[in-house]
Amino acid sequence: MHDSCLHLIKSKSSLTDGRGRMNNPFYYTPDTLTMSAAEEVKRLIATHEEWRDEVAKGKMFGVLVVEDATGRMGFLAAYSGQIGGREDWEGFVPAVFDYLQENGYFKTEEQEISAINHRIDELEGSADYLSAKSHLEEIHRKAATEEESYKEQMRQAKERRDAHRPTATPDEQAVMIRESQYMKAELRRMKRRHQEQAKTLEEAVRATEEEVTLLRRERKQKSDALQQWLFRHFVMCNGHGEERTLLDIFAPTPQGIPPSGAGECCAPKLLQHAFLHGYHPLRIGEFWQGASPTGEIRRHDHFYPACRGKCLPILRFMLQGLDVAPNPLEQSTDQTLEVVYDDEQLVVVNKPSGMLAVPGKTSLESVYSILRRRFPQAEGPMIVHRLDMATSGLMVVAKTLWMYHALQQLFEQRRVEKRYVALLERDISHEVPPRGTIRLPLRPDPMDRPRQVVDEKNGKEAVTDYEILGVDHGHTLIALFPRTGRTHQLRVHCAHPRGLNCPILGDALYGRPSDRLHLHAERLVFVHPLTEQQVCFACRP
Image (cartoon, rainbow, N blue to C red):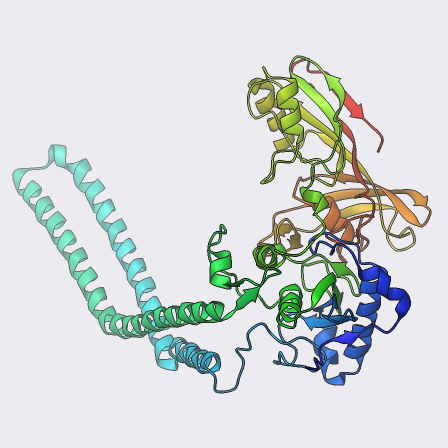
C-alpha cells in the first residue's frame, strides 16, 4: 500500500550513509543524510503559506530516515503537537492517536469542560458578586476600624480605673465595675451589629463561592478522567512488536502519570508510524524552526535531543528491539582524576569533561566515588560544590566534616572567587561590550531536566560577569566570573538572546554538539579555613 508520508531518497550517494547503528535521540550529531532530509522538510514547510505565522512563533520538526521491506530508503517527517489545530497534514506522519475529530469524545468532553470554565468566569465576574464582595470588604474594614477604636477606649478606661482603684471608695469601686461591664457588653453589641450588617452580603458571596468550588471540583474530575481516557488510547509500539499505553509506560516513573502532551512530540510520532508500516528506523533528528520560546533557548535550524520529561520513558520503550547507539553521557569512560593540591583537610582536583561530580542514577564513576576510595578515612559528604558533567576544571573537596562546613560557608557567603574560561561558537567581539554583567534568573524546566529556562517571575537570581579575552579561529575566548552558582548558569547566560546570544562551543543542550563542552573552571581563590591564608589554585584546560 502506498504511504504518502514516506519520502523516498533518490540520491544514490546517500544510501550508504544510513546503514548501521541508529543514532541515540538524546545525544547525537546529525549526519549528512539527516540534514539532507531536514532540508527537504524545510522546503515542504515553505509551501504551506497558511503555516507561516504559526511556525514563525517557533515549532519543532523531526525526520526519521527509514528502510522499507524492499530495501528502499526514505524519510518520514513530523511536527510536534498540531499546526493550525490539525494533526493530518499531507506529507507528515499523523498523530499516534487522533483525538481531535469533530464531535468525537474528546472534543465533546472538552466542550463540557470549556462550558464549566465559562460558567466559573460568569460567576466570578458577575456584577452582583463583585458588588457584594466589594461592599462586604468595606463593611469589614469599617467594622475592624470601629472595633479597634472602641478597644482603645476600653484600654484607656481600664488604665484610669487601675490607677484610681487603690484609693477608690466602695461606691466608686462599684461604679468602675459597672463601667467595665458596660463597655464589654457594648463591644459585644457592636460586633453583633456588624455581623448583622454583613450577614446578607456574606450569604450571597458564600453561595457564589460554593458554586464555584463545586464547579472547579467537577472540572478537575472531568479533566482527570479525560486525560486518563486519552492516555489509554495512546498505544505505543516498539521494535519487538510489543504495545503499551502511555499509562503503562509512565506508571513506574517518579511522576507516575504521563505529563500533558506526552506522545505528541516528533520522535514518538515518527517511530510509531515506522513500526506500523514495517519500516526499519535508521536515523532520527529534531530541529527547531522560528523564534525561541520565552525563557527557553531554541535556535532556528538547530537540531536538538529529544526532551526527557515527556519522551524519555516513551522512547526507552519504543527503542527496544532496535540497535541504538549508547548515550555517551551514560557510558563509563577510562578517565583519570588529577589532584592539584592535597593536605590533611582538603583536596583540589581537576575534573575532566564527562565525569560526574557526584553519583547519578547510573553506575558511572564520579569525583565523589573516586575520592571516597582514595581517602577512605574522609568524613562527611566531601563534595562542597559541583561542576556539570560536561564541564572540566577545579573542584575543592573536604576530607573532614569540619572543613566541609567551613568551605560550604565560604561558598554560601560568596567568598570564593571563581574564574571559568570558555570558547564560544562564533566571534562576538563586535556584538557585545568587551566586559560586562549578565543578570538572567533561572529555574529548571520540569519537562526537560536538566535544561534550565530564564524566568523573571519564578527564577532564582543568577549573575555572571564576563570579559572577552580574544578570538581563536573564529571562536570567542571568554572569561566568566559567576557571582551565583545556579545549574547551567554560565551555559544559559552565554547562549540566551538576552545574554551573550552565543552558545559555548560543544554545548549539546543550548547550542550544537562538538568534541566536548569547551567550558573549564580555571581558577579558585579563597581563604583556607585552617591556615587563614589566601590560596589560589589554577589549571589550564
